[in-house]
Amino acid sequence: MTNDNPGYAYAYGWNRFNMGIIGAWPEKNQNFFIKNRSLVYAVAVFAIIWLPMTASLAFLREDLNELIGCLVINVPVGISVYKLVLFRLRRSVLEVMLSAMAKDWSVSRTDEERKAMIEKAKYGRFISIMSVSLAGSMFVAFSSVGAWAAPYQRQFITNETKLAIGFLYPAYFPYDTKELRGYLPTWFGQFFVTIVSMIGYSGPDSSMAMMILHLCGQLATVRLALTNIVDEECIKDSSIYWKKLASIIKRHEELNRCGELLEKSFNGMLLIQMVLCTITFCFQGFVTFTTLIEGLTGDQDFPYLQMTFFIIHGFYTILHLFVYCWAGDLLVFESTALSHAPYESEWFRLQPAQAKALMMVTNRSRIPLQITAGKFVGFSLELFTSIMKTSMGYLSVLLAMMDT
Image 1 (spheres, one colour):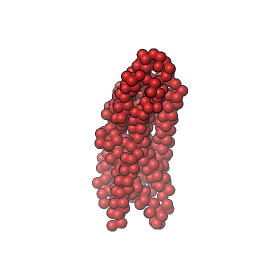
Image 2 (tube, rainbow, N blue to C red):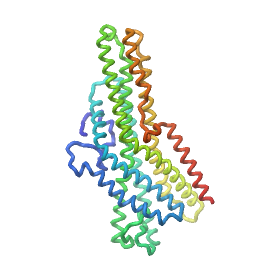
Image 3 (cartoon, helix red, strand yellow):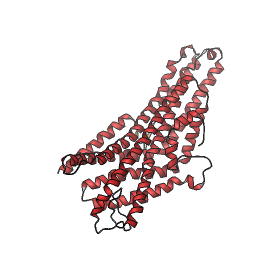
Image 4 (tube, helix red, strand yellow):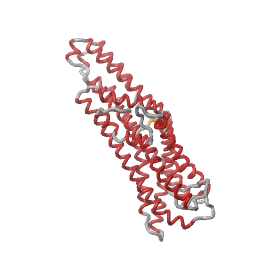
């Protein structure tokens, strides 16, 4: 999508940059390779990171700390691969949503409506900037840990030449990684694919948040239009009132369809992310606690780089789930707030038939728009609290296992 409208450009923020890197931002006149670049990246992440890490789990099963440390990285990488594939398959949905956004920003608005749209756009822009910043910080911390530990770990190369030693990730490759000719290309391959993996995890999330928040902004403009529907012109000429009401109802239904399209297209991804994030938070807490305890009580120096990475990684994954829950909560609020708008208007000045017509919007607004996890549960701040409590419960079990 190429639209130079300044409001639209402000709304998508850094998302176009993020999604452009992984080839998931729809643009006009793209050739076959550029359109399918995200699939190529997905295959690269799967083959270079996820699959070798999964194979290495067989060698780490005797060491609970190493096993969980591997899963902390492996699970988000798997989610990243899934998102890269899904956003390519849902390219047409993205085109529809982004076209609607560009159109909405080009329509003439009142100052009050424009303010409501900009307010939501600021939230989306802040989320996209935070996402880029955290992904960059995590990449620097992660690659620094890997580069610092590689020479030390290479001292302990075993006879099992296919078990990767001194790489960014624990991995098992189907070729010899003992010699430098196999080690260096693989290490740099992991290094560059890590960038794609991290953006592949965060970019789709910030883009989804942007679209949900834009939808919230549009619902806010409909609410304002409904609040101000009664004026002197409507009182003098009833046809003007009916035209305004018809326009509001039509716009409300358009937004409902957009919300349902977004929900239908991505609820499966959100279900997987919700379940796996619950497990990942537990694993992250376990690895962070054990590393902290070993650093404070062990003979070696305190692992500042590792702890920095664990803290950033934990905040990174928690933030993206929180954004979905917060945006989902805001969507429910804005969609149901329309039912109160007629009562804030001067409805008492209308004729009985005109006042009764407002009930159409009021009744429809009682059914909230929701972003759900596989149609099972709607995203809300209450869900976020529940996930964190569940993760902490699992964490206490793991820590008890470690003690025994």
